[in-house]
Image 1 (cartoon, one colour):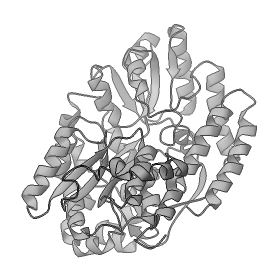
Image 2 (cartoon, rainbow, N blue to C red):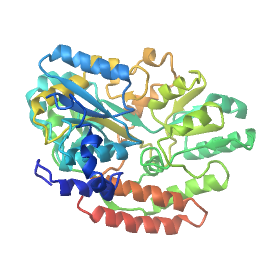
Image 3 (cartoon, one colour):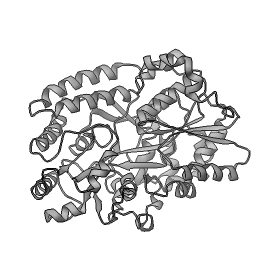
Image 4 (tube, one colour):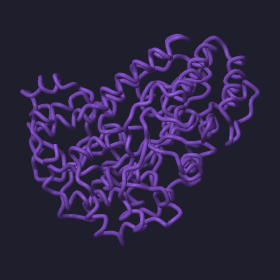
Length: 469
């Protein structure tokens, strides 16, 4: 799998990343239709950029293409907005396109797929970043090093982060008022959080749920693991990366940095992991939250906006979502995740990955650089549907219309808590995620389910991590 000319058989092995290998094989006969290869004009020599369909607005995509064309009139660009349910579904469809021989040149990849693409499909950006170091200094000076490190793999840089979302805690201000509770302090604790939920519960009716969260890799149980000083998989740093840190970051910001994250040995049965699950189970038993649901969290917007949910973990993307749902800017606010043993938060980031199969790699690099420019991101992110990776873009003016009042929390989560890190997403992330979601649901089914479910999770995680994906 180190060869850039990947075989169809090898690619079909990755079908577990959403669609399933059998499903991919079953659609081989209709690859032209699946990939759009039968649509006139699809093979016009353009630089093809694949994005998750819901990632950008049509106006944003238009601005992205038109702006790049003005700067590089000799490079034709086509944005392929792939409609998908979530990142797993999106990656499965991209892998299908690659297997069909109609691979895009660039793919918009979130943390969930960074190491998968880097290990098997991506091109390191090191040589271009070194060549254009003078041009990139302004970019790196505006982007937190933790975001950059999350886009590295075994010493090399594979993406320039352009957006991220940390899991902070959103609160409905009307629910706070109804409960007679003050907005929590920045240094609030897990016990403060529990006490607030009890207060909200007492002031609500039978249709009210104080705390609601979704069962997924980002924003599910993982923030509680981080807050309790643990992780689903043992975490360490790969060696290397000094070429980047020494070139772009001052000594204080590059201290402790490496060549990217490594997630290795499963530790689902560790005491602190069990403690986090026991805590969530206790909230369910106290009727302070429901068992977590699956999905991407969009179903939460309605119930939160109408006051049927008081608190939920979300990132900067929710500021725009709640505004579009009709919630006034003073109807909600955001605070850091509660402190437990640590103040460490989790985040997910995204940027463009360059595929080895691309024959337009120099042109693709120019697009990557253009996509990370401040003026580009300002035109792209107009509705607060995410948190820009560039610190300078987070201003009072940006959040004046949508809120929340404590908008500084979004980037300060990185600046205030420098050990904040990415969700655990090794190359085997598809199977790891499936195991996590399956056994988390089982673990929280009843008070006595946690221990047996975590033991089964440990066994399944060990099998998943042993596979050479």
